[in-house]
Amino acid sequence: MIDDLPQKPVDVEAELDALARRYRQAGGVGLQILNLVGDSAEGLLKRLPRDIRERLDKTTEAALAASMRAAQGSRRYVADQPGWVNLAVTTSMGAAGGFGGLPSAMAELPITTTVLLRAIQGVAAEYGFDAESDGVQFDCIRVFAAAGPLAEDDGTDLAFYTSRVALTGATVQGLIARVAPRLATVLGQKLAAQTIPVLGAAAGALTNYAYTSYYQEMAHVHFRLRKLAIEADRPHPQLVAELQERVAKPRLRRS
View 1 (cartoon, helix red, strand yellow):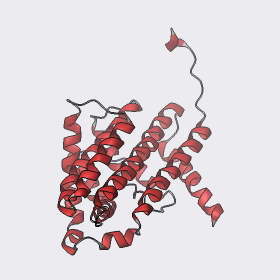
View 2 (cartoon, rainbow, N blue to C red; view 1 turned 90 degrees about the horizontal axis):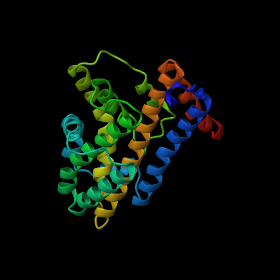
View 3 (cartoon, rainbow, N blue to C red; view 1 turned 45 degrees about the vertical axis):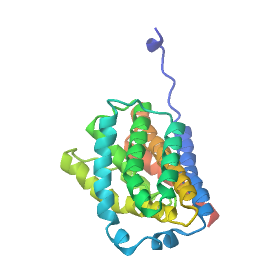
């Protein structure tokens, strides 16, 4: 029986090195694409009307909660898709949303968020986790705690991966409230890019491609690290700390 064969020991150091490379490269893709739009993060956000900026946190929090329910419910009807399919879907939606300016971009935003959450759930399932469990749903929201492709965080977002608390509906809602302001900044940049005259559809496609690539990569880092802790029988917070050191080290060398 194959199951009776001795298992090859996990090379934790090599796995962490690979995850650090994946973590760093994820942000680079988004930066390169968003630079094509021709504006800084601050400049993008200033494009939004003041009333939109002021209620973006609450809007994002409500959209994230609704998207989580929708993504979870869709699992009964639609199978998990490969990463390239998710990229194609969100890129197309971004183009459609940007074509009509801010109103259509606002309408497209919760749909894109739902697809992103569903993609994150698919990555969790790929690593052998039950995407319908409370713990995995909690972790899927935590993936959104990563600041997004415009952030230079030196790996500090990895701190979000260490916390473990009693899982209740209130706990998940509390996490959504905590993540929402951070995600609102990312989605605000996306909305603003889609308001650029003439380039709205292209900007919507580019930003959706960037964000889908980024969050799928963050999901791979997150859930591979969870699985590595199980396979190597190592405390998860310890692995997070070691990964954080690897992510930050190249940046220290360049300074």
